[in-house]
Image 1 (cartoon, rainbow, N blue to C red):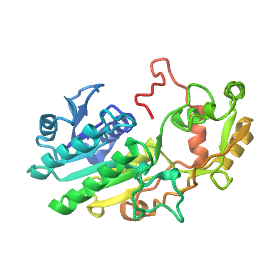
Image 2: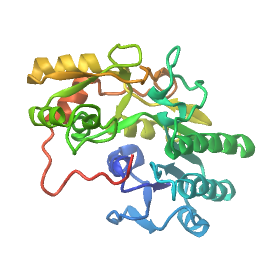
Image 3: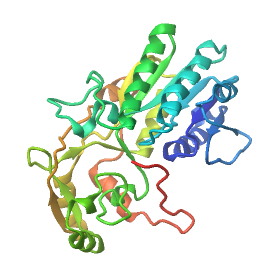
Length: 326
């Protein structure tokens, strides 16, 4: 087994490689890490190929003798490169994969941006049958195109493909900083832009958290997944007979309710909250298909996600760095 991991130095890639190396099921597997800007360490089981999948020769070199592909590499709101990487890059990988004599399975990490997550109203749970609806921007569009391309290659050539669709992926203290009113906010919304500047500074210093409300005025429900749960789903999908040409939602069992979040932080850490109105819509990703077919279960719920983020102590050698816009 030779597993190609694209986006190997990213949040998911690093955890996935560690998981593959630690899991007895993959004790004889070798890993080829495809790296672009950052490099990972090579070992007796991990080799590195450097380059961008936007170039066909790089994709061809990366796929030599590969049995499994776990495609994690992506772009965010970077119009100059997003189509070259996410569309052309995936195309080159799939072209090489379909003619390979060793290739056995191609796994893609999709995203809930492809179905618009909280930008659109959903009348029921978001399932794998929910139609694609990209919200404005190039990132969401790229996630739609990736999922459709993978699906069509499976149909066209009978390939063993699988897409794991994840919402916002959390690790370490990410979730804590996703709620910050300071300049150190992780992701969006950018809370400090939604309140007066003097209030934002006070909220940041006091640790006040936003109680985001949806378009109906209710506490918003938004989906998240911890990277450990996502990695466990990827490992479960590898060579699983019930994963062939399937799409799975990989998320927490229940979305984070910002009202429950605010109440829990007030009760456990004495933190205040402030109402933030929005035009966004509550939604609920249904992960029952992955649980039923793959036998997978998420380990993180609201309390564990909060506690792990607030208890995390970051070392000086591990500064918070946001590698991409958006």
